[in-house]
Picture (cartoon, rainbow over the protein chains, first blue to last red):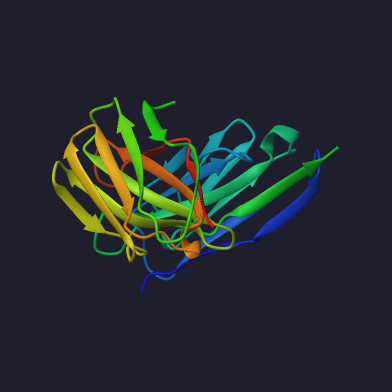
Length: 112
Length: 112
């Protein structure tokens, strides 16, 4: 069955350092979405990637979709304490576009 | 934030009792979902709905049932709660299949 692996599970950085989380699928994806969940909060949509090799930026966040459309990454440049939270990738469940499978998430802790 | 209201937000119940969680949306979105979130497992889909009276199972549907009698309401019922169903439950909505999912603020359920 479809598997979505997200690494690392946890990362602790000093403010100002960079951070990257990776999402890997066992199958080719039609698209991939990224969500952020602040501690005690609910997941919030960040972005959707559709095209092979696509790169999108949102201020300090850079999202990439692999050429083979099986992996994706989220890179944060110069982290801030406001970046604290868990970052999830989400992919359409195999055989359907209406259900998403979420990765297990990467929890980011940022300290001063 | 999308117009999604979950109730109750917090509940403690005893093993064996029935529990119903309610999700109400004001966005007139077609798709509605119930996810549960547990440490180490990320977000897992319980059930989803693609229209009034149209529902389908997710990956962890055992022990849960759902109903959608109106576009705006999606109910999740635990017929006989067990301690393994202690979790945070998130309702989510989507305007079209595979599109951005918007989450409610969550319902914290503890089964003792």
